[in-house]
Length: 128
Image (tube, rainbow, N blue to C red; front, side, top):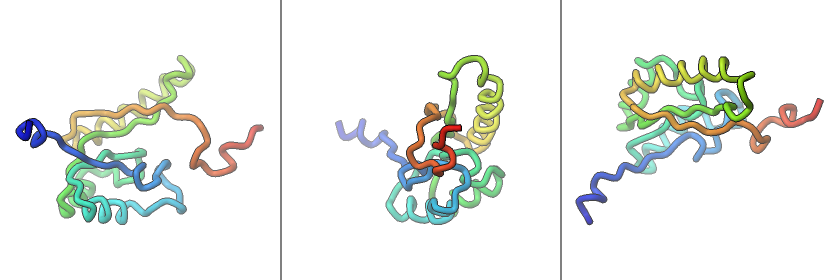
């Protein structure tokens, strides 16, 4: 059983640090997230919301590698469950995330449904 456990890779993601959006001043700055995830002993990360971490592959490669980290997957927050009206914009977003994920040497995308108001600015949760 020890051999199988040696193959398990444990990582983390920005959402474990409370990150839900690409840019929210109340969230942990991305540099601090990378520093702390490395300090916590993780070797692998997911990208989290597109735009939270640098989207330039060269810069992101430098930032993660100097901390001993690697990217395991990109993260896509989708609204596919909302039907055809959002599919085109969703695929455009998926394409951007997939391109960065591939450039980072990762081969997986994590798809999470968008929606809800937990952690969002109050203005997003107000009904019109």
